[in-house]
Image 1 (cartoon, helix red, strand yellow):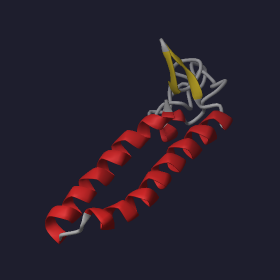
Image 2 (tube, rainbow, N blue to C red):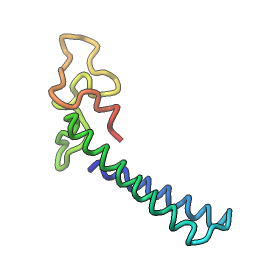
Image 3 (cartoon, rainbow, N blue to C red):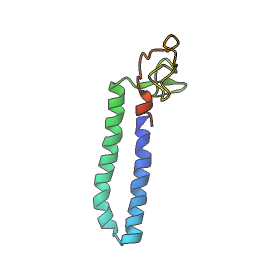
Image 4 (cartoon, rainbow, N blue to C red):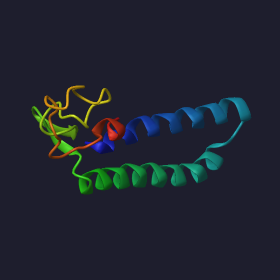
Length: 104
């Protein structure tokens, strides 16, 4: 699922290609050279972040899919708000601590 980040990155690259062609008169050959590098960068960024999040135990089930969330749901260190202000009501995270930092 983390490969989803590659789609907006590819979309930005495509928009940049069109901008360079329209505004700066770049040819298809010029853009083809850059396209190779951009595709490799986007692919390896998406792959490396998905593997890193897997190794950090950040993926947990949320219904039909798995995503970057804390487990159990709403645990203290997995949300931006930091969970409960009362230490007695705080739910400790078993997996996915600081998931709000990694979730996209």
